[in-house]
Length: 80
Image 1 (cartoon, rainbow, N blue to C red):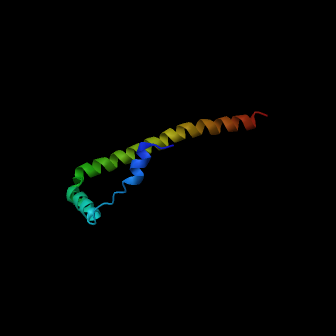
Image 2 (spheres, rainbow, N blue to C red):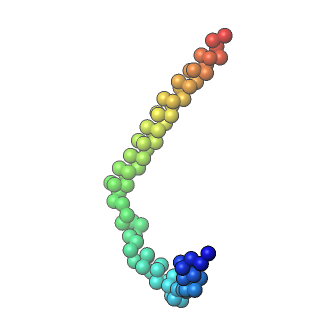
Image 3 (cartoon, rainbow, N blue to C red):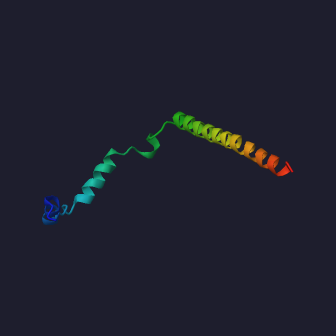
């Protein structure tokens, strides 16, 4: 089973340059925004409000599923 791709991968063991990691990390750091400039305060407040609203909706949906289940169990156990 002599696959040309396997042979090429085994033959060409490339090693990155010594400063490769430092250059990559410097490039990543140059593209990041400072923490205080990521979201304006109003946008951050609106996002937090939307997250709480979504969480409240999930709680309501969960209770809407749980209450009929509990009622069904109660009805089944008390049906005699």
